[in-house]
Amino acid sequence: MPAKKVLPNPFGHGLIDAYTGEVYDGITVIVGRKRNPYAKGWVMNSQESLEIVAKDKDIKWDTHRILCFICSRLDFENWIQISLQEIANELEMNKSVISRNIKILEEKGLIIRGSKLGRSYAFRLNPNFGWKGKVTNLEDYRQKEWDNDTKRSKALKAVSVASEEQTPQTSSGETAKNLTQSYPEINELSQEFDIPTEKLEKLLRYFQSIQDNPA
Image 1: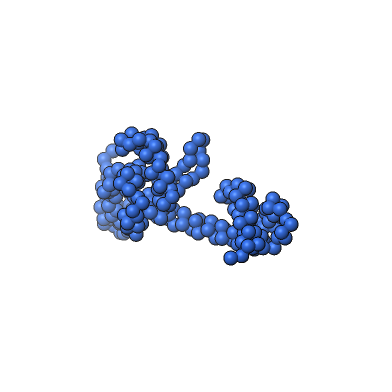
Image 2: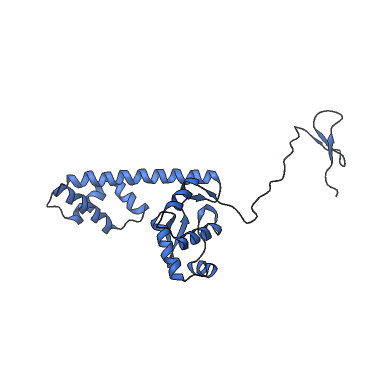
């Protein structure tokens, strides 16, 4: 069947199919074909973050190379779907060098450690550095991070205030138990961010030590 050929409708508004006589009401809108200028994909980057990275003297040449390669293979929503061994093979580096520099990138906050998958962890590029995906999804991510930061602040404040209310005779274990029962924010923080009970108890003891030994 030949492609549609539409012409102005001589009997009224709209268009008419020259082959079938079908009339199309409405307004004609010409939509151009979208063309991707980067055939293999592209990533948005924060210019401010690029400047910070460029001026950071702790980030050496190898680290820059690995960061650029990670960005070149970035998956949607910034997930890094590439193994250390593959990076090592592509850049002709030792795997231990890759691992060491990945740790530097994590310490600098350029990549974020996600949940554990089997024997390894999932990583993603920090969205504050760059983003691959829809802008609306980036905005959703930032809103979620804002909400999480608010929860962390509330939970830490609850721990701080509650630890001041504990008597010296109360053990750290009892303190943690009492606090988690009295302040549901602490339980939410522990479950949502996978914070072990031991770390919570250390945090409680730290606040208690500040109270007992003020500067």
